[in-house]
Image 1 (spheres, helix red, strand yellow):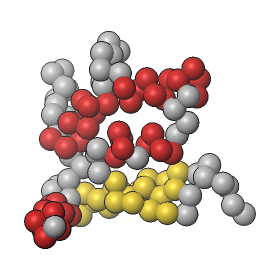
Image 2 (cartoon, rainbow, N blue to C red; image 1 turned 30 degrees about the vertical axis):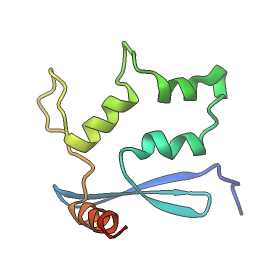
Image 3 (tube, one colour; image 1 turned 30 degrees about the horizontal axis):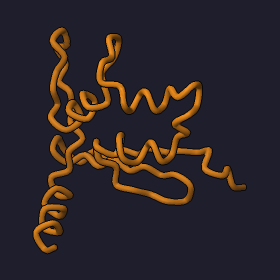
Image 4 (cartoon, rainbow, N blue to C red; image 1 turned 120 degrees about the vertical axis):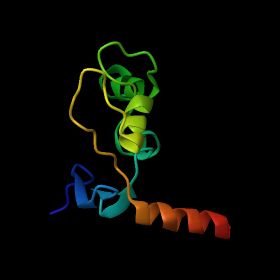
Length: 109
């Protein structure tokens, strides 16, 4: 049975506070999901023109009144920024091992 890309799975591997890996499985493939993938990868998966372009507006909108912008969501996932009225700690999507590996690869180029 093949669902032709209609199934998207996200898995979280939480080892410790600074080592949280997120994987996105879609259409027979898998990526190590990082916060910026909200802007770079999800638009390639979802139809941006759906419902009068709502998906595109979600990615491009910088002036939302009722929810966070995509950039604010990314910042929250990267830095763990708290909302003013929230007391609970926001856990960041951070993988210190992957960050070290990525920096090493970037330095090698």
